[in-house]
Amino acid sequence: MGPVRTSRRRLAASFLPALVCALLLLALGGAGPASAAACPSFKVLHDDRIGAVSLPAGSYEVTADTGLSCQAASQLLARFLQDWDGNLPKPWRAVSEGSGKASFTRGSLPGFSVSRTGGGGGGNSELGRLCPGTFTVNAGSYIGPLFFVRGQYLLYIPSRSGITCRRASILFTRFLGAPGGTLPAPWQVKTQTATFFKPSNPLRSAFRVEPANGV
Image (cartoon, rainbow, N blue to C red; front, top):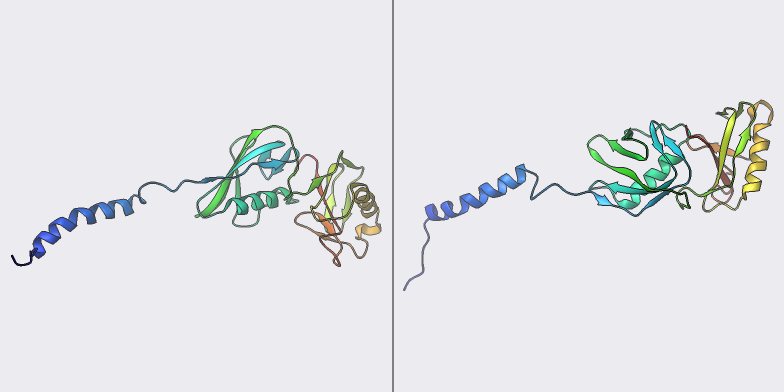
């Protein structure tokens, strides 16, 4: 018996339904929408704010959109919590969904969301170590370009810094009392996060200041 020949018409008839199904799947976005990734728990050390978003101290579930890694989402959340003025770098936008719940978007690019899962503070290597108690600023004062209003402040020690909490408190007192608000040399400040550091060793010699009630 000779080879079986299949007509072009029969091939087209058998191929067309599969092609239609494939096109429908593409139009609908595949077999289903890509799911976001649930990331390891993130600790917020104290009651905090990011713009209009209220984040009470505790454990948070971070959910990253497809295309954004859990590590990147956690680093971004830590970065946003460190922002001195609560204004996020463009094009990021913080959307409050109630106390302890928010989403962070940037247009059509992948973002992430956070949701509080439990109480209590705790350590977080991204934020550094929170010093015990609060620091009182008795009168509004400039330190370089930053203005510290009267009130309570928190001091943080970055994870790689060798400065103690006591030393940070002494330095902050000294900076507040400097004539004309001039930051004493060789100290400098990162205005976005209110982190004071020495340029000769910015990681080893650094501490950060933040309003106790958020921004």
